[in-house]
Length: 216
Length: 347
Image 1 (cartoon, helix red, strand yellow):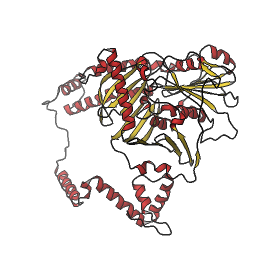
Image 2 (cartoon, one colour):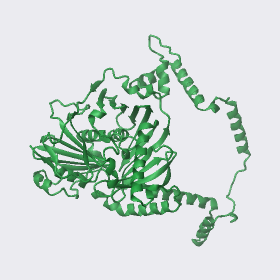
Image 3 (cartoon, chains in turn cyan, green):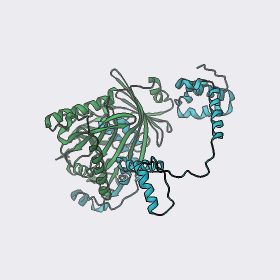
Image 4 (spheres, chains in turn brown, green):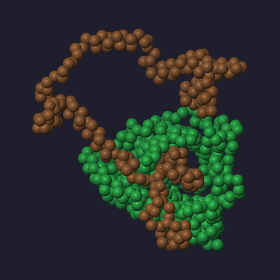
């Protein structure tokens, strides 16, 4: 991309291009954004770069917009011709699935005007399936366990005793996880995690997990 | 066992039962030699799996977004890993909290905090002789864990083999691993407590294997460090015994893999007074590891003993005579207490 730079520094095409690609250092993002705001040429360049990027990613986007307009127009026309449904059609019972029949039967049993099509019943099944999947997902289980907890050991005076009789599991004080954002603890954590090196269970790369966890 | 996890135990086991039912329902076609029942075959097979997983992480090029969740906290980062012959390049951008880039070129690791205009340069080989998976624990990983193939699932848009790495004793945690079927790259991991509770989970939300960004864009954060305060923490390898300490009994399976002295201050919080360096001894069972930090006790800094859990990482801090001991690791709290109890000062 051409680099046009005038003494006032109004357009730096290269910077703008880097911003489009998400590769501009954060310190320069602000300046590039200001340029974009103040300079219409920068805005035009910004638009062009995006267009280029879009077309590179998908050739369909280079087609003439007339195609879309035609499609939209014909869609509108056909929508206008659709009859307006004033009342839902009476449930025929034909082609209803077993679920539909059960659902239907339930409606009758409870005496209410509960008329549900098989489609709704199927929808219900899908929702139930999603719920089940959520329940089954092991990660959804994790938040239930208060994994982040901090408890202080009984008394500072009883240190010798604490040393001998192993610290008991019963927490005397459980604090919220956020409270242990203690910089010192973080330092130990950072020093410890550095050894993650390439230990497999820590993630695809030990460093990855470290970098992720340390910055929490 | 985590003490506060007991209320959810029943629910966890209920979920575990459902899992078993679910896994048993479709016939698992891709049975591997892992479940052969022959101990020797299984051991060999387990090592082969772990080596494949480790090699994929080191030798493949990949980029993606990883989410680490533990308890109520979630953090994510973007990773690009590029391997070209013998050279490895890696860039990790933290996507949560304060901006931070970690750029690794082979053994050299840059950590850059752009907001503070601070950077830290470390040599990984100098930092530790930690050889990573298998070389450290090598032969005896199989003595403390067993590995079972439990099926196939789809993770981050890719087919994955699901492996269960179960701890044989209570001194360590178990893991559930999802390894990419075609490359072996870990797509997802879970750290599991004894009860089956997931303590921490990390997973790619999306990943592209075999592709990488241009090298220049990968190294971009460390190309513009003009005006940054750059620290090179000096890490000195030492012997624990020479420093007047020893571990009397230790914990089964854990062997010392490194012992260093590191400065007590951090690059983001440089200390005004000259603080004594901190001793760090690292023990590994081949898969996980425990750090033991020893430093002189200072009443104003070390106010109270404590025990904390951050995801799967447990921490124990307590005073030992004139010293302050911090034991940290992805192991159950009793294991850390065992480490702390068997540490002995031999002046």
